[in-house]
Image (cartoon, rainbow, N blue to C red; front, side, top):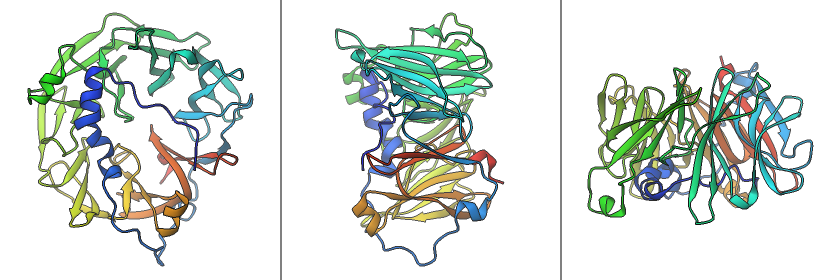
Length: 383
């Protein structure tokens, strides 16, 4: 099944290609890329569905096309019906960043010529303020990244915050950029990073960069180690258990928490860790536990995979996908939520293609080239 492209691979410069495609991508796709256990036939004891467990949940369905025609790829939902995303202009010459309202109306925020292979990525919000990174290719083959912002409630054009972004490190996480106390934060590789430093095992360094939402100079804080941004004020190891110890670093308290990963593949948020337990024939189950190893629980067997990189969304929901024999043939999935509060697995949807979750809103695609549609579930409304 083909669905509209959500976004091209996140922009990575020299160290982005080295770290993000090496150790860092292990965190991003360890659960998705490892061989699955043998697909199983449908379980006769089907978990309950969302409508049964949360009848008052906010959800929506809408077609992929905008009112002016082109296919739309959501990148961030403000609620179950209002989103920010990308679509070409009707003439096919530019890529637009737009707000799609609940009634289908479209408000354009930015547009970039398609000749520059543009990308809008790492969208994040606080209140009415939206921020994002936009990247374009230059004539000499380099990628130029800038940080932008706009007040969604004001009738003012978007404002460029800085071109001084460094070699940005994005991992397709909702925390790739974080807003805290009117500053925008992101991770970057230091300019001296080189292939030699990586291959010789030299201690990596990560820059934590920030700029005021009102604009101004960029502040740079250097942290020893390979880190990715997480929920403020935390950084998380970029290795995901595949290339070194798992750690969490508190930028405010300047403390480091070591997670005992053993021989398992572990990815952590500040509050929960996802553990992929390996058997002789591949993944045997998925567990969740606290970073100190407490409150460990089995949430799925080896037939399931994590659908998003972020662990325990809203400190409550693990987003999972399950493919059985029939779904493997049709290249679709069953979308599941494991609810830590209820200790219960709930079916969200069947026949699912792409899955995304940011800002507490889960969305996914269904259908084929002719019938593709988007669907949403606002996890913040689940009682």
